[in-house]
Amino acid sequence: MQYSKLGSSAIDVSRICLGSMTWGLQNNQQDAAQQIDYALAQGINFIDTAEMYAVPPSAETYGKTETIIGHYIAKNPSKRQDFILASKIAGPGLDWVRDGGLITGDAVESAVDASLKRLQTDYIDLFQLHWPNRQSPHFGKHAPNSFKFSDADSAQQTAQMLDILQGLDKCVKAGKIRFCGLSDDTPWGINTYLKLSEKYDLPRMVSIQNEFNLLHSKDWPYLIENCVQEDIAYLPWSPLASGMLSGKYLNGARPQGSRWTFSQRNRLFRDTPVSELAIKAYQEIAVANGISTAQLALKWCDQVDGVTSTIIGATSMTQLVEDIDAFKAPLSAQALTDIANILKQYPAPF
Image (cartoon, rainbow, N blue to C red):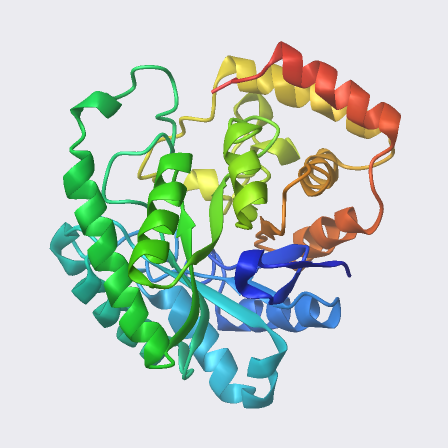
């Protein structure tokens, strides 16, 4: 297993991060324990979760994933030191989470305490803001003029960010969290937090996790350059585009028990005719290289300069083994060239 620094934190994390959002809906306690044990045995030392999980999010599944991880930790206390545990506070919009309110400093403190209780641990290594209070170009909202940046009140947003940092600072000083990070944010978000941290001597954001895959590579080059230059770890989530890049949803297929058979909060916005064309093109490259399309997508993601650790998720051990095996050998120069040519044809298929 290869490892990278988690931004400016000086923590070494595996190039693979085990995602957990299916635990509590598609996967049960036993499934999760099996996945964690296997991942740790392969050298993975990084597990990502969130208070909002399982997904698709609902009042019924809220907090279930953290609870499952907490049961694992309680049953295996000696293993807690073997992995970096990351969790996230939900942003505004979910009625069953703090009445759908904004992230505030006080909300951070209460969310950290609640997560620690569910996780049955004394500390969270990396505590992240799941999405910002302001509108951001994620979850299918990245087309020009999807919304107006010019309508935003930057002074108000900056004040909110300062309040959030002050809440995080209290948690760090209390030993409840070690480091802080972002999710579903932008270069402006990164840089505003960094300026505030420096100006007010508050915790520094060490990472950001955004969607990044062969169908959605918009963070290259601008946001990723920002991360590299400012020592922010870049953590791609959904490297398989919600499972699409495995090819299992092609031609309208909906395998029993798969994620797309559940109601989706943001609709199936990735499912477009152009996405299908792109996936079929990537399938041809995968076949030519003797690997699955999923492995092709994961290998590519791992080889993008600036990527620190790719967040993977699986609902079966077969999928998990396949995904982890993808990181054992890099793609050839020819395969990368072939992929680049497809990216030029389908730069934004959804």
